Length: 228
Ligand code: SF4
Figure 1: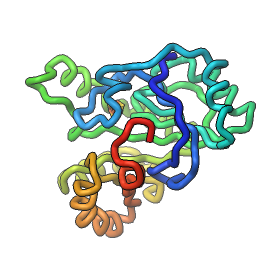
Figure 2 (figure 1 turned 45 degrees about the horizontal axis):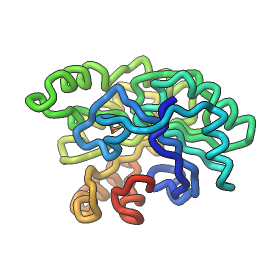
Figure 3 (figure 1 turned 90 degrees about the vertical axis):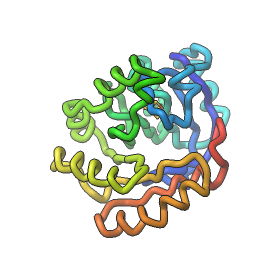
Figure 4 (figure 1 turned 135 degrees about the vertical axis):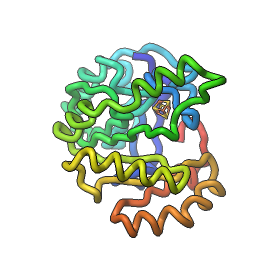
């Protein structure tokens, strides 16, 4: 499996915000969001092919008990199954971060699903082929249903404008099994100023809608840096 980076940091998003974790970033994605903050694992995938043993050796350098499998799209890679088995056997807490378009029978403690809504599509003029493929692939209802059923989950949506909130509400309505307290809305933005501008209207809307506001602490703490 091609790995873009393995590093220790602090989880900045969702229910485990503040938890020191080892992040394993797989390289490769079936989508092409215009705002992707890890283009080195999607638009231009970088990294080395590592075996499960090599990945485990690098993870064990740190004494953190939390591992986050992220990307790119980890669920693209069947090697995730033996990797999660090894991590579970060694008592790591496993979070898998996915866009929710693919399912694998992995062992994990938290399935962190970031569905990609219509605000994510790459430009149709600059990237016509990827625009079509992204729009075809970004919403797969039966996969979402299966992930919600099989795993302890959280859902994280990137919100850019107030209209995006209506789309999130429509999305949630399609899956009555979703627990609203496990839904996080995150401001779109690559720096603290952009995030704070969106927070002024998004935070009160989240409170009104009984959804979680997710401030994306890693950008506040580290900026949008690789390995953070
Ligand atoms: S799904 Fe995630 S990794 Fe893939 S392009 Fe979108 S933001 Fe980037």
